[in-house]
Amino acid sequence: MSVYLKNTTYINWKTLEFSKTDIEIEEGIKGKIKFHPSGNPVPEKHKVIDCSGKFVTKSFAVGHHHVYSALARGMPAPKKTPENFREILKYIWWNLDKNLDLEMIEASALVTAMDCAKNGTTFVIDHHASPNAIKGSLETIAKAFDQVGVSHLLCYEVTDRDGKDKALKGLEESDAYLQSQQGLVGLHASFTVGEEALKKAIEIAEKYNTGIHIHVAEDKYDQDFCLENYRKRVVERLNDVSALNSSKTILGHCLHLNDNERQILSSSLAWIVQNIESNLNNKVGFFNSANVGDKIMLGTDGMHSDMIRSSKAVYFVGQNFDNIDFEIVYNRLRNVHRYLAENNFEGDGENNLIVLDYPSPTEFKQDNFLGHFYFGLESKHIEHVISNGKLIVKDREVLNIDEDEILKQSSVLSKKLWERMQD
Image: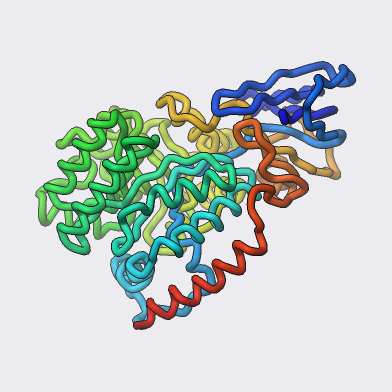
């Protein structure tokens, strides 16, 4: 049954123009929306939602997520306190991903999709790792996301850190998944990806006309390792093997870049995804957009699934370290839609919407939308969410799954995961 929103105030996500209207929403990946004068008769066989006093705009998308981190919340401290970024990976995240099985991956994906939906996110670009449960991991995540109703662009994180056999299995999983699903070819980071794995990953990406998704210069160690082992910097290494030739390629973080790397990126087709809260948490540095071009979008790096929160963090922190303002950060938030549309990825069409219940003590209009966005709006104001024309969140509750049951299952599995990590 198609959704019909009555008596809305629609906010155009590109122009920020406000308009009073009814909205008829067509279901499907390529579904459209139609605007009708408020008060017109509602077409038959529509699910009507009265949006009097509410605001409607396009939903959000995450440019870089990590489903595998979903069961980490509240876990015990590692056996050894990490002293640097590489030890954070070794003692926390690489320990966690090694202990995941397909059941845990499914629970992680369901929890992540559920959180995304409730936070108004209807599309997720995810970067997955589970070295001891590689085969079938991407399809498991995809099915979980489909169940909730959240669209996706997935990849498996290929790396040599667990041996060449695991790197090969990661490449095989990427190839198998891309035969039937849209996706990317994932790579962990330059310092854990050898020449053979890098070459084969690019070959698979070219085979399926897609891009790679890789962490770049998140920490200075990535650059130091690359210089010592390849006599070049990370972006130079990627550029030399034509990894930056696709507009579908995503480079995560990009904190520690020199002038030449910035020039390469500004001239390339690749996109950068900024993950401010993760960078703060890992104490690895601050993103600066100088001379890298405007192909910058925002992610959460698995910290959470709230893009309003992520956008605010980029603005508040970035004032001290980047040349930004309200409009620049809002454009970065919305650039993921540009990335998806320009590369013909499906699932982020105009029929992906959120209904905001935002009672403001001051006037809310086009001229001051961004002021409200950064100092007023929060995810708690998201009342309904529509994904590909279907209502997936109503009155702040996910419709397609049993939230309580999912949380109960994930709690049991998280304890099992944490116990494994202590062995």
